[in-house]
Image (cartoon, rainbow, N blue to C red; front, side, top):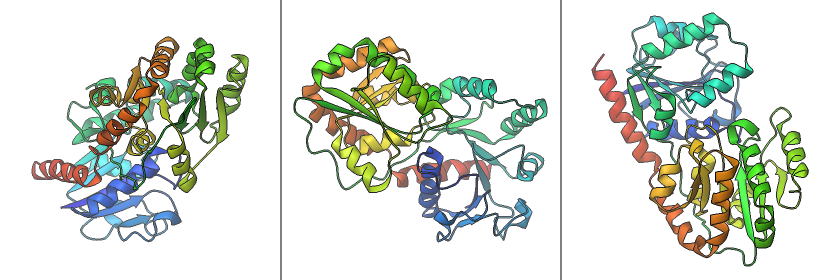
Length: 364
């Protein structure tokens, strides 16, 4: 089967799609014939991949300009960051007969659409185009059942749930700190989406308990807009300077070192698709504290891989307090976290996508 992937990403290590899109295309290339058309110019990170192409090779943004057989593929996979309205390719898809699947990456949840509409002035014609684009899609692809429920059927009732994947690392947690607990968050410092303001308020509610337990949390990531400064000021105002730390962005070998040196991963997002950072933490054997908005609450509970909470400071504080009381179970939960991560093997996910895309192609 011939599959055309459309995206609009740069090699930015703190943006989930910049990690998961190359991985799923790589895995899919082992099952199908694929062509990845990235709507940027000259992104060097993926140039060596035989299936990768961008505007430096095909500048016209037209499917008909692509080589055989990808000028008329069996299925097109349009990632959520692909500019539907702004690109001529969007019009080509809407007017054409090639079936396409829209992969949301969390972009259609009620919280995310509310956030986008509140922070961007969107012209009416763009909104109408996006609605038509989503309605015509052969299917909407979600990563978790929770993401689908948070998005609803109003966009397009035809949907499939196929998760992101993870490559299991060779190293994993081998021990936990005595007399203290090192918490960790890695991701973009977007206070609203990642719920970092909720996390700081939750820490303030049980500040004395955290101090007595020797709990600190390092929040790693690049700032977005003025969010980092606002979060630092919020933490200082709550008297959390010694508890909540902002070391800056981390990646590569240093990120692995940080993961292995931590005891628990904390993600209090208001809205996500399926966060790669959380899957990575699980793969290293870190027990996790997650909110409903991460879209992995059910899985963490089912595998007993950590603690879960609603998206409120009070309930996040409750989960943190439970973790402090149950710190002797961290080693047990670490093994459960690894077992959960192994459920997200890239090869299995690529095979599931193949079967679904083939069904779409055969029903044209």
